[in-house]
Image (cartoon, rainbow, N blue to C red; front, top):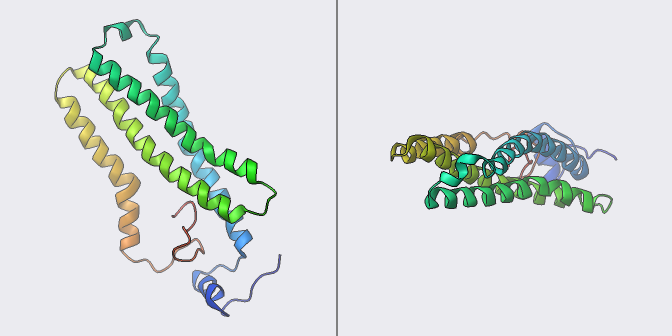
Length: 187
C-alpha cells in the first residue's frame, strides 16, 4: 500500500494537518483495532453484570420481590440482553464482512453499534442500580441515588467527551475527516 504524499488535495491536506499519512484502509485498520480494545473493556463489564442478573432469579429471596421490583428486574434483563447484543454485534459484523474490502464501512457500522451499546449499557446500569437500591433501602432515597449516579454516568461517558470536542481542539488525533464518523475511539 503506497502512501499518499501529504499536502496535496483535500483529504491529503487533512492528513498532513493531523500528523498522519495513512490510506483509507490503514486508517480503517487502526480504527478497528481501537474499537476492539474499547469493546473488550465494555464486553467484560456487560458479561459480569448480565451473569449477575441471570443468577438473581434463582435466589430464594426473588420470590419475595414486589410486582414493581419484578417488573424492574424483567426490564433490566431485557436491557442487559440488548446491551450484550449491541456490544457483541461488531464482532459478527466484522466476521461476516471480512475479505469483502468493506473495512471502512465495517468500522463505521461497528462504531454505531458500539455507541448504541453504550447507551443501552447506561440504561442497564441505571435499571440494575434501581432494582438493587429499591430492595436494599425500601424508600425514595433509592431514586435519588440512582438519579445522581445516572448524572455521573452521563458526565463520564458523554458530557466530558462532548465538552472536549466543544472546546475546539483542532487536532482530531485520529486522522479522520470531519463528518466521517471519526475513529471508533473518538467518534
